[in-house]
Image 1 (tube, rainbow, N blue to C red):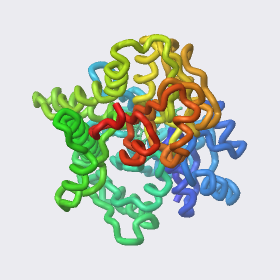
Image 2 (cartoon, rainbow, N blue to C red):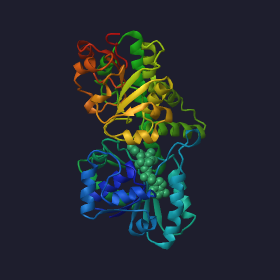
Image 3 (tube, rainbow, N blue to C red):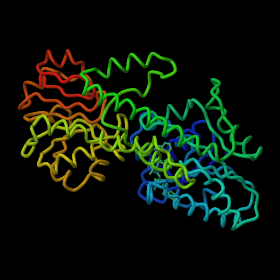
Image 4 (spheres, rainbow, N blue to C red):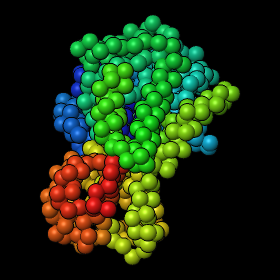
Length: 444
Ligand SMILES: NC(=O)c1ccc[n+]([C@@H]2O[C@H](COP(=O)([O-])OP(=O)(O)OC[C@H]3O[C@@H](n4cnc5c(N)ncnc54)[C@H](O)[C@@H]3O)[C@@H](O)[C@H]2O)c1
């Protein structure tokens, strides 16, 4: 099949590459000229495990190409995926300008290059967007087309694997013709029997928000349980094991920490909350989720203030992890952005390391944070001579450090762990002062 992908971010580039890998001819369009230039030279512009290998193969076999020219991609494609940003706009509403501007261009292109095409919204968009995109195009052309909703559920850090083996594919369309075409396109990815669920456009659009809102709620619920654990002297690890074995609850997404971040959960929770409000419905549970997450993100700073009795000025603190989660260079809404900003304002000097996200972090961090952070290129030199270490991201390489080294090289072996990486007994044996989330503090 001839596939066009508009927008080559985490979703567009992974989707385009995987569609090319399954034998389709894919043209990817982006307005970012330097990004297109890099991809043309064979460079993958984001860090995503496993993407390089599939990308290289698709390029070698000439099934994947890149352009800044939307006309070229439109002319050659039967299915066109919109993988455009939908950032939070005013009041948390999803900003649809990227999607609607491209829809406007597509209307003109149908007149120039007639022929049935399916336009697919893969961006996360509010209910009713498929209709709005349809109207935009139909205002310009009488040619036959369908607009389909096909939300993406991939996780950054496991995006290729998720795309190649999705637990489900959701397709929202009322057109049999479009449903057949979408089914043919996705069949290679669901050979093990996972479903392609066809539904109406609005339900499909809402499914994506419902999924992310549910997951953000699950994380937040566990964070609140962790906060209660700290008050009553319980251990959230035990509570997690105790409830996770209940199959109605499930084991996954029950790890307490310093809040959810990333490019999706924060904005999608806001957006569905906003949509509910527009329809006169007060989505109260999500109000709480957003409020709790705001405080959870900087809860570690509160613990530091308490430990140092409010006197953090002049301290030097190491930071392990800047990305919003491991295996990605994405720092959008990463807790580390907020924590480093707060610490810098309190007069703390920092030394930070992340295996992949230093450049993206530098582009997103506040000026005051950057002025007070020395970025280093390895895990171990972060901790030399520091007063404390803060762990913001659970990269694998932070899980098994030489525990004895903390006491040897740090000014004081004090660790504030926002990701609960270490066993409490082990921390005690190593002589650490170890403060984590929802678990008893060690040697305090
Ligand atoms: N990142 C994720 O994990 C994820 C997962 C599921 C769904 N989504 C959704 O998918 C959508 C895209 O997310 P993303 O993380 O890939 O975004 P991104 O910001 O990484 O990428 C968007 C790309 O679109 C390009 N672009 C902007 N305007 C354009 C235009 N007019 N023509 C061509 N290209 C244009 C940008 O240059 C950028 O490369 C969003 O709606 C997001 O909510 C994201």
